[in-house]
Structures are given as C-alpha cells and as structure tokens.
Length: 116
Length: 105
Image (tube, rainbow over all chains, first blue to last red; front, top):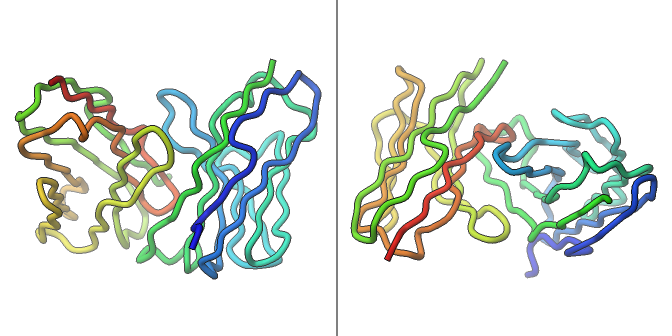
C-alpha cells in the first residue's frame, strides 16, 4: 500500500497563476483533509471531505477550492495564487469522519509551494 | 472555541537528557488527544490518549493525559539525535503549533 500520495512534491508559481494539488489514498478511508503548514503556525485545516460527495471549509479556506473526485482522490485548487499562499501543503485521510475522534490521521509527504 | 497550546515552542538539549513536552487544550466535548512526530516530511502518529491517568509507552517515549486539568505531556528519556523533530499535539483536526526539539550530540 502506498498510503497517501501527493503530487507534485515541489512547485513554484508566479502571482496570479493557478494550479491543482493532487492527493490520493489507497486505504479505503472515508474522510480526507487538506492542511497548510507555515513556520511557527502548526497545521491549519483548509478544507475537508467527510465522505465522497461532500466538502466543508476548515479554518483557512479563502483562496482555495477543493474537489472530492471519488473516494480515493481529493484535490486542492488555487485559482489565482498569491505570495501569502507560499506554504507546505499536506493531505491526510482518516477511516472515519472528523467527528470520530477515535481515529488517527495518515498524512501524505507534502507539497512545498512557493508563490513569487 | 477549541484550541491546543503547546510549550515550549522550541527546546535544545544534549543527547541522553530527558525532556518533557507539554500540551494544554480547551475543547467542548473531549474524545481523544493525539501526539505526532514530524521530521522532515509528514507527521507520523505516536499516541492516542482517551483516558485520564493511563500512561501510553513506546520505547523511550511515553505520554499521559490529565482530563481534569486539561493537559497532556510527552516524555522522552535518554534522548538520541534521531529524536530531533517537531512534536505535534492535536485534537483530531485542531493542531497545536508544535514543539521543535533539537538534540545535540
């Protein structure tokens, strides 16, 4: 099992460009999450998908959109990138939904994004 | 508002020392608290704590929860350079800022 995979690993964008970060999991998990991690800020939730066909905003959703393409895949789109979106992005998945706290998250390796 | 506060934010010790990392929290309906270790890449799971006073152990790492005082500690004994990492405390999807631990040889 590959677990949670993310592409790309690194990306450099110019202000105003768009891109999509891809995430896939092969653990048959129901829920998937997108976080950003900035120095000194810990992990902050951008969006999550509790189950196929549903998505919800997290703590910092502005400037992002998501798509839960199927049970395996959850993508994050930046429509018009800004320097403030320079960060490391992590995708994660859990077997149960975010309301089930007896459940640990499995993280992908991250995407390092720089917006110039 | 649910929140997680970790301290210290940064810690430097010598190999062989024992360290204690702290995590305090506020939550409306507590179910569990998790600890993760993050080296260069993704966080990896260490412990899940659901009951007060029961210590979880894994080798030189151990953790305990106090639900009355709303905190948890993560202990690492006989530290090694491989323990250098950021340690994250979380209430499911709410993470603390982490403690960056650096072990000097």
